[in-house]
Length: 124
Image (cartoon, rainbow, N blue to C red):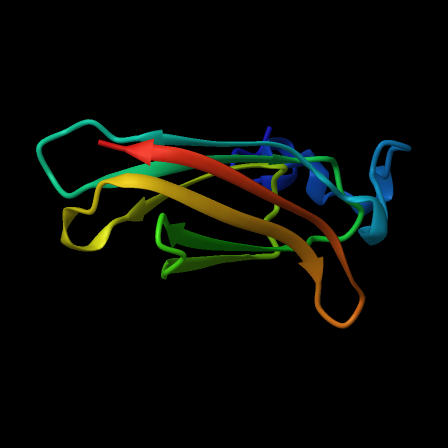
């Protein structure tokens, strides 16, 4: 086996093996979104665990972090992820704590918005 063969590790990249569970853009959805505070002595930060349904075409994912006063604090974009499960770390400026809302959306530029979810979480 060739260990440089990415298709071994990322079977979703094999278009010739499209299984029936690969969904078209308008049917792609979030399965779960979870925020988890990173507990260490450094900057205030949290990890986002994102899972989507299987997709036929790679989506875009946009994340917007809002504080309890409705102020936008941060944004992140994941452009054409190759996997259904993604983990990213976001940092909070000035060590902010409190309640936050994360607005997440899956979309395909110039095609459609597939799904939108909001989650609330607290950083202490």
